[in-house]
Image (cartoon, rainbow, N blue to C red; front, side, top):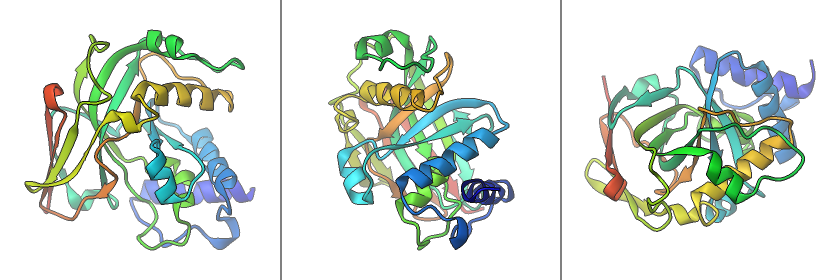
Length: 262
C-alpha cells in the first residue's frame, strides 16, 4: 500500500469509528498541498456511499491567506450526511469537533461531465436548477492542535461532516446571493456577518471553479447533486454543548441549529 493510500485508510478508519486522532502517522502524513489532495483522491476512490453533493473550503481569498493555502480545497458529501429543514437539533457529543458555516449552495438540474475545455459561467448558470440557503457543519477526524495545519483538512476530504438544506428556491436567478448580508448568532450573540461576494465575486463562480477543478481529475458533477460554495459568516467552531446557532439569510429565511448537551 502506498503512503497516500495508508493515510487515506487511516482517516477513513477514524471516520467509521467516530473518533478524532492526534495526527496522521508521520510515515504517511502529507508534506504539501499536492500530497494532501492525493489523500483526498484516494479517499474518494474508496467511497462506497452515494455522493449527494460537494463542498468547497477556503473559497474566499481571506480564508486562503489565513490557512496558508494556495487555493480552495474540496470534499464530497454523501448519503447519511444531509439533513433538511430550518430547525435542526443535534447532540454535540455525536459530532467530531463541529464547525459552523452559513453558505449558499446550488443544486444541478443537468450534468457537468469531465471535459478538457473549461466550463463557462453561462454553461454553469444553465445547469443550475435551484439555490440553497444551507448550513455546513464540518467535522474533524484530527484533534485540536494536530501538526498538519490546513493539509489535514485537505486530506480529510475537506473536513466534511453534516450539511443542512434549510431553504431551497427553484426560481433563483432574481435572488441576490452576492450582496445580501447573512448573519450568525451563537446563543443570541452575533459572531459572524458577510455576503456571498467573498466566494470568488459570486457563489456561482465557485461552482464553475469546482466543475473545472474536478474535470482535471476526470470527475464530473451530476444532475441532482448540490455544491455548497463557502461560508458567508466565517469558519467558527461550535463553542460547546447547549449552543443555539441562528443563521439569518434575510429574505431567504432563518435557520436554527441546536447543539444539545444531552
